[in-house]
Length: 315
Ligand code: MTE
Image (cartoon, rainbow, N blue to C red):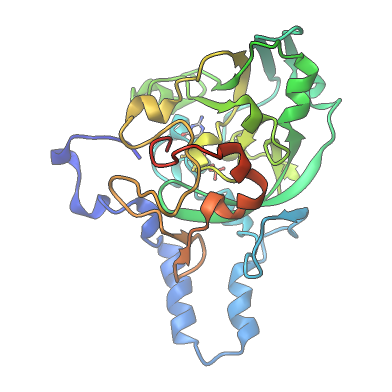
């Protein structure tokens, strides 16, 4: 997603990275093609390698052929520029990161601003396991069994004032602990935002885990946003601050490249990214591309949030 001068970009990089298969997937795909005559269960087994714990949770918006993405892909193929720009960098470079103790500040247009120790922040809320389809703006996707709490519950507890219209969330800024922040590849700290009605939608979660375990560092420990009908960059990781405001927050990717990334970032197969199509996606672990669904398959639940809006202009 990074913006560089054209002269610095190799032709092989122009296609978003997710469209290419990584080495292990090439091997798996070659295995499928070579073993086309094998029994169907042998093919199915590719989606569930031994290291995946059982996928726990209630499926939300899943199609018949959606299977949870294996643990090793969910935790080994990540975007988290604070730990490097390659897909395998976050897992490799976040091993020393300590996500405890952790404080979350809730502030802005609320009657009850507070600093919470993470445990106190989470404890009063209902913890749920929910399996969501997730779609990255780079045209790859996963199905992830998240564990977490409802952002609506957190916001309700803070008692927003009548003036609050948006929610802004900010990642930890600590270059000593997040080595990627020593380079100015983005305007740190990473910031994301939602309209208040999006933030309080019942699908919107603050995740504390995947596959029933605490979040691995590379997935945004100890707390990250999950909004399944939006492109993955909305899912800000390692959150330290939640601020209610009356102005639309300036989100990091829109600030970095406004002609490429907007505030809304709703998954929309009809509105292409300026450099690639959004009509199809590659499910990590699969060989053939899938058609991308409007609002990532959650249109029934969320399209009313955007009635009357021009989704091409508000991308
Ligand atoms: N949050 C922070 N702080 N820094 C990042 O670089 N990358 C975003 C999002 N949240 C990012 C971030 C992008 S582009 C995606 S696709 C998702 O995290 C990836 O989440 P995952 O690695 O858990 O799949």
